[in-house]
Image 1 (spheres, rainbow, N blue to C red):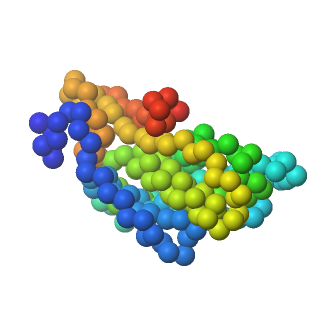
Image 2: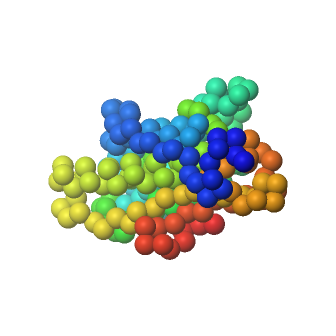
Length: 199
């Protein structure tokens, strides 16, 4: 039996609070069980040098954990430099989000996604992907409403979840206690029409 009495194939409760950071172009707070991540998007009217003059947009992502998001304080990465784990998660986030929309339809804008973990209880990267995907859709819809985009591009829904084997049993959506004792675990990113993005 799992600590929270969930079935092996059950998700933790998920809630989305939109507009969590009103200064952002789009934002939300995603809660998955005991994990909370703030996902905020900034729109910039410029693109990286390799895209200038192409008419194509760009989507990039940053990920971080607040010092007290875990049971023992984490040193800020601003003080020590980003870890390999952080870079790996940022790359995964970027790849997962860029598949959602044809970047050529965005024009020369950059959508910068910031995912900040407020509370970590397993599944922080999958919560970040799911929350960021929803916030990204909100940002693109706002661009269309405000006339930045003449036509609304097709947006492919994306979400992510973890799974693993704990004490020989396959479990979905691992919390921290399960993740830390898992024999094997993996993260799965899929589109709304059932295609794999990452595993």
